[in-house]
Length: 181
Image (tube, rainbow, N blue to C red; front, side):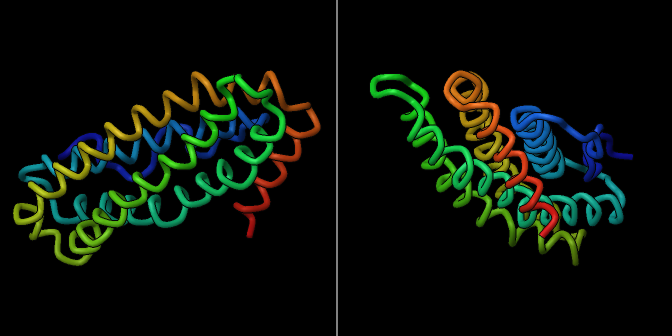
């Protein structure tokens, strides 16, 4: 049995209170699923059902959940930080870089989606797609490592410093609204 390619991370159902806690929960899931993709690419001798389950989870996460997270950052966080962060402070440019990085991440995800789709319906094709899956998954993990570090070390502290409690509460409402739609 292959360990670590299950589609759901631990604590997936935990409810976070603040915007930053919710975002950190998203980051935990991003790290989980990008790791699942890399482990799937390296899997050998795994039951077809496990491959299908992992590929379905990856496809679902990266087509539904990740776009919601990006919308949170692009539509709720970046515009507020650009207005609130004084000129010369890192938070505003970091928010811009965050949005720009989404484009590069999305390009890699778009290349991974067809591979996961193949494995959803034909898990026996894993050996044929594993090299490309591994290369793209490794690239995605590396991109996320830098991206999440930027957010956790610069963007989130700027949110705490420059956004009011009311603005942070509004972000939470918007995030929840996106997920209930």
